[in-house]
Image (cartoon, rainbow, N blue to C red; front, side, top):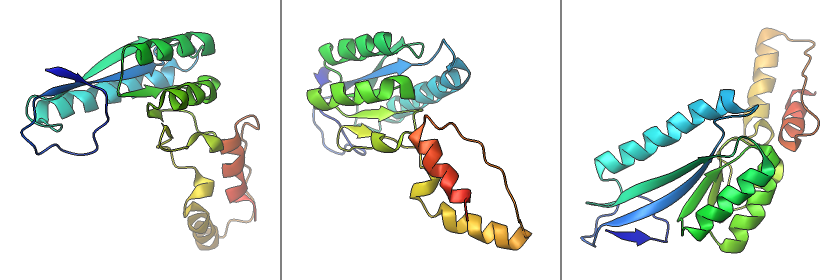
Length: 178
């Protein structure tokens, strides 16, 4: 198999030679975010295993996951992602908010797409080089759903506590304000 350097979206149906796509995964298996990072990593590994077992990318084509623990440390995470890029990855899965903005700049400069797996800052979703699959309440139909629930249950007062240093949470808290 050859090593791929382009991303694929969907099941391959051609009879092209099998390709191995390298994906870099800067995991959060240690440090303060490990409580969330470990299950997230399990999900990434499960998805890769299923894609490889089902032939999702075409007969014989596989995803090779290059996984390293960044531990939620910006300098270490940047070094890991730069290493992935040097290894010719087709894409990167990464990071908590502490690293996401730096990684966003690095992957965009390299023209390699990245999926941020746990950070929710408003400015992180910048396709085609940074995707944030987490939907922020403030950017969806959720505010209308909140209004419906408030009316249905007769809610008069609610207290919402958010971190003001995370723009995504700050924006989401406004969903609850009348």
